[in-house]
Amino acid sequence: MSAEGENSSAKRATKLETVANLSTILVSLLLSIVLVKVFLLPEGRPAASAARPQVAKGTNLKGSLPGVDWAKNKRTLVLALSTQCHFCTESAPFFKRIQKEAAKNVRMVAVLPQPADDGRKYLEGEGVHVDDVKQAQLSAIGVTGTPTLLLVDSTGKVADAWQGKLQPEQEEGVLAALKKDVLNY
Image 1 (cartoon, one colour):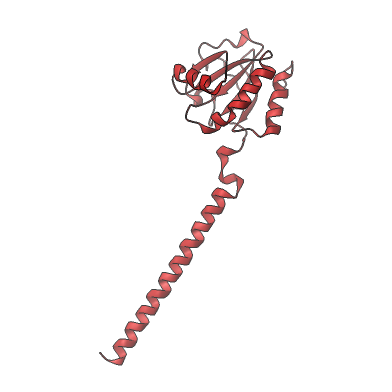
Image 2 (cartoon, rainbow, N blue to C red):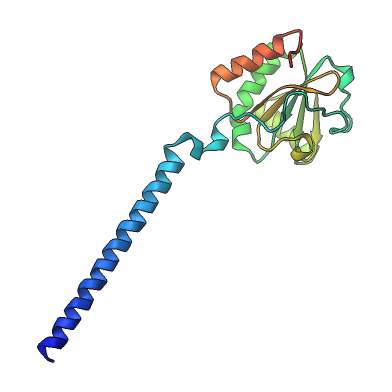
């Protein structure tokens, strides 16, 4: 083999090595960006934080949940849950606290996309007692994520709403709203 052929092979090997090194660096940078977004930035984990739900105050739920008589109750707390939602399960102690501290002020209705019997078993397993369990598509009541809490007045209008696994200070805000005698829009 001539010196010119060896020199050409060496140049190709150097170019190939440079391309491989640049590709490795690029993949490492992209992976680092993804990891930072997912694990370090709060907006990378929307389900874990409590966000304002899509259901706006004043939304009328009358007719959205068959069998729920809003007029029968001064206020109803709708728990939009799913048996598949680990944030719902993690929120169960708070739901029990609501029951203990504010149940006399509100009627509690759980709404799940799963069959009502499955919902009852799920809630019983978590030690959460509600007045009624309904099966419905959560989108029918404007819910886009679970858990979502909707405080509904006697006309079927949403007075307040919370979504996600709530932080302790947000839980206190929910309890304060539930203990009020008057709903503010």
